[in-house]
Length: 115
Image 1 (cartoon, rainbow, N blue to C red):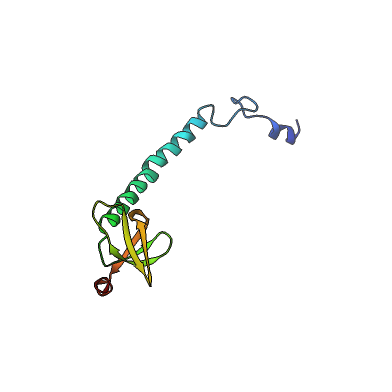
Image 2: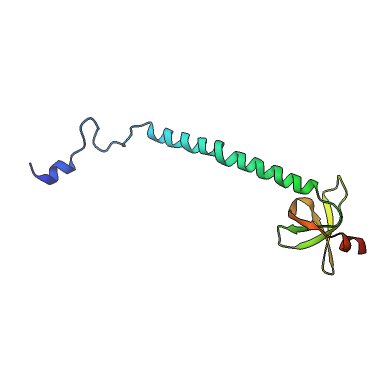
């Protein structure tokens, strides 16, 4: 028997051309992916959603905010129960949805008082 023919043979107990690990291997991999999603991804999404809701709930007049479009502005009016707020950046006033506010940068009471 030549050396090449020894390496070309399938191991004993495994049919030639068979999948290593048997027919349950794809189910095992799918199970690992589902477990990863449940343990890592879904809790992170829930935590991120709660943080965003806290930012939106704490919006008030005079707060300096950053929107998801990159606009840094000061809140001119934010009424509870309304979905829109009015912000002022330089010489421009904009009406935006509350949920586009990504971060509250601080408070600018002096600028809020002059408007």
